[in-house]
Image (cartoon, rainbow, N blue to C red; front, side):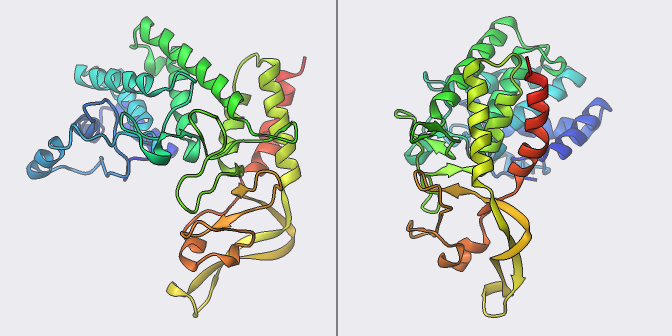
Length: 338
């Protein structure tokens, strides 16, 4: 178990908390152990395993590391779990850890409303406003739940609750500012955006500045979840939905196939299928063509043109927009009809 808890697993752990399960308390105490002095948590660490005495000493030596992040579900996932533990068990150490992490999220927010991937020492692309893998949206959902006094966060004081509401408002304004405009039309969002100019920005060499079908689904769903949306929010949603409709890649699907000539004996390829459709993860800004890139950073227009390692170890196509169009958007339209 890494720093990300799949939602179903988080729900299961929270059930154990309510039942007084000792493992849930142990995991919560592990979270306190791994929490950095800044208040946040690192990513990709198995924080649920039993920790030996020697491991505990080593972890404590890392307290002042500047590797706290909201990437890969880190920090806001630990906070959600700690809130469930405290609400059920009322151990003061868990409340204190939650509040320390909560304050970390508030400090990490830029004045323009966005969140960097890492804080307090963001460098390179880690400085960018990060939608990648649901980072900023995950933070905003937690803060909104606190602001709305959801039962599991009822222990949070009113001053912090008010701060959470302001942070969500600023974050929502940032989302509207970062929506990419092409030829005068609003489209969707990049996986990350420049923290000063708001322009879509690159990250790793195989993640170019682009329109991101994958990350934009979470952003649109967050906007759809806002009660009494303003005209600006409605326009942002409608524009994004229109882009998804226009950018659907019909008649193809992405599959894994056996290929003895490739490392591991498998390859991932695009094949024709008249009954299928999908979306590329990244689209070129301007042309709206699907784009792909290997570790050399060179943009290509065919998946087959990038090296096998990147071709098979990254999610180049996404299907989640189909659920957005067929289920979420019609329900939102019905709910917001005036």
